[in-house]
Length: 516
Image (cartoon, rainbow, N blue to C red; front, top):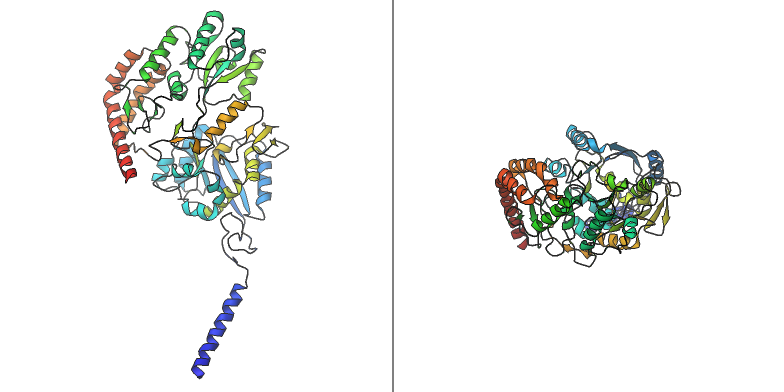
C-alpha cells in the first residue's frame, strides 16, 4: 500500500511539473516561426538578437539608398531585428567579383546569381545552401508570392538552391515604329508582319533621309525576333547554345534540330531578311552600331526590334529632344490566348544564400519580410511620397527616380507585388498580365531539364568561334545565307553535330525518367 502511495505521489509531482511548464510563455527561447516574426509558431515575446545581413547585388548604389535602408531597419527593429549592409557590384565586374568573394569564404548572407552568370558552377562546387527547409520554416510568404511552376522548374538537382527573381514567364516583344512617319505616309495601323514590311518599303521610297529598319544581335536580330512569334512551329533556342538558332527546338516534341540539316522554317526567314538588306531596307551599319536603339532615338530609323511591349520614357524623351514632332508606337504580333505560348518557366535572375553565411535563417526571414506588399514597395521603389506614389494596388507614378530608381529584379522580384507605371498603353498592360500568369502558358516538354555541357565543352568552344564570325550578320541579312551556311558546315559542322547528339541523348534520358 505504501508502495502504491509512493508511486501516486511521484505521478502527482510529475503532473504538477508538466502543468507548470505548460504555463510558461510558449516559444520561450525558440526560433521565430514561418513568417519570420518572433514567436509566430510558438507565441511569446522573446526578441531576436540584432544581426547585420551582408547582401551582394549588381548595379549602382542609388543616392537615396541610405534613406530607404534606414526606413526598412526601423520597420524591422521590433520584429526580425535586421540591419542591412547592401553591397553593389558594377555589372562589368559582377562575374569576377562574386566568384572571388565566394571562393574567399567571406561572410555573405545573400548574393545575386543567374544561369547566364555562374549559378550552375557555384551550385556544383557547393557554394550555396539548399533552401527547401529554410523556406518551409521561415519563408512562407516568399513561397506564396511565386506560383508552383516557378518553384518546380527552377530547381537544381531537385532542390531549391536559390530564390527565383521574376515577374513573368517569357519576355514581351515588339517593334518600335515611328508613328508620325506612318501617319504622314497614310499607312493605317500595322496589324500583321506583312504590313510591317510594306511600311518599311514605303519609308524607303518616300522618306529618303530615314533608314527603314534596324535590329540588334542574338534575340534582337531580325530572324530570331521573328521566331518569337512563330505560332506554327514554335521555333526556339536550345539549352546548349544560348540564343543561337543553329540548333533549335520546334513543335514542342523534345527533338533537337540542326539548321545545317533541317532548314525550314528558318531558311525562309533568312532568305527574306537577306532580301530586305539587299533592297536597302536594313541599316547598312547594323553590325557596327553598339546600341541598336540609338538610331531610332536619334530620329534616323523608322522600325527597330524591341524586347518589351512598351517603350521606356528615356528613349521617348531622347527622341523628342532630337525630333520634337516625332512619336513612337509599338507593334507586336504576340498571341495572348491561353496556351498559345510555350514556356519552361525558367527565370533569369536568382538570390542565393551562401554556405558560409552565419545568418541563414535570418536571411530567409528578411526575404519573407521583403516579400510583404508594403515592404516590397519600399525596397523596390523607395520612399512613398518622395520617390513614387501608389495608384491603386498594382500601379505607380514615379516622382524622383534620380534618387531611387527601381532595381527589384536583382533581389526582390515576384509576379504578385510588382507594380506597373501609370500611363502605359492599356493593351500592353493586358499582354503583360498574360506574361505574369503561369496558367496562361503551355508547359514546355523540357521544363526542368538542365544540360550538362561538360562532355562537349571543346565542341561548344569551337562552335562559338565560328558563331562570332558569322551569326549576327547572317541573322540580320548582311551576308548570303547559302554561302554562310556552307562556311558553318565546313568550319563547325562536325562540332555542331556532336553537340546536337549529346543534347539529344540527355533530353531522351530526361524524358524517359519523366515518363516513369
